[in-house]
Length: 404
Image 1 (tube, one colour):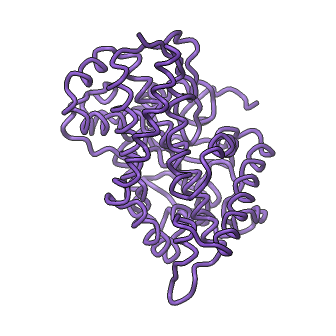
Image 2 (cartoon, rainbow, N blue to C red; image 1 turned 90 degrees about the vertical axis):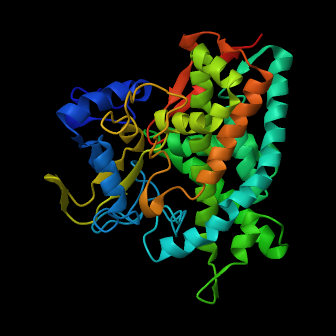
């Protein structure tokens, strides 16, 4: 267990229970007093809280590259000169998000067709049917968990559908993803999650090599770069990325939206009565409850606005904090369903902007639509039972609700 934080400006910890429960007040304090906070925890890092700073750093891929590691807890990061060798479980990392050019450029190009609006429209049919089954189960019982039994069941099955993974594997994948992302102080558990996922993907790749299927793994195996087949290491890393980045991030967004509607009856009533607000409401949920904080690890000393960042330290791409900057978003701490100007950074910015944003938006929209169509009134049974997970991906893990 880490020591409690005494000074958020000089000793912050994004895994601290106070930060997980209420990062918003911490960002508000830092934005005024110390907009580039620093900590020595987890190998040292910096935490920008202003929109302009996060945006600028995200676009400066020369000073702040991604190929040296994107996680706060160094388990599968790329090597840093003088540092111990990384685990070999994912030899190519998880491109394109963990890569710099040229690897980033061509691997992102491989992902984009699968995440195009046309393909996402095909996935919507499966997603909507899934959501209806899940809602039916809640209705049959008159209660349920809008996070664990709804939000967390959707992305894992949609991603599994894209990869060709059997739906009955969904709980297993959920466990692996949580092991990897939620347990910073338990290296063995994190390694267990990664090994479980990698071992499964290795087997799936071998199966597709022997017998191709109509799924994303097969598409990657049949792809080429510069006239050569895409390596198995790259295919494995890209599949792992889809599982890690496409599951917890999206279920956190869905869960946050469900929690908001369960605890803000006026917004729920308005969205039910004015379905035309759905497009702006979805963007507002993404802004207000952006789940993801990425990291950029430096290999050489540099500086940003007078802050001396040392080699080996990380700059945390605090997209959620940027989205709450009142200099950019009037009434930034309020959820305004019809907010017109919303240049949020929920999906990042620059060359590493989320390649799966079309898919994530669709899943969030369909999840909310299907729930409030069938359950236009619902509320949290007991606020004390609501739990959140945090760190690099923040979202509710349990939101018990009652339905009429």
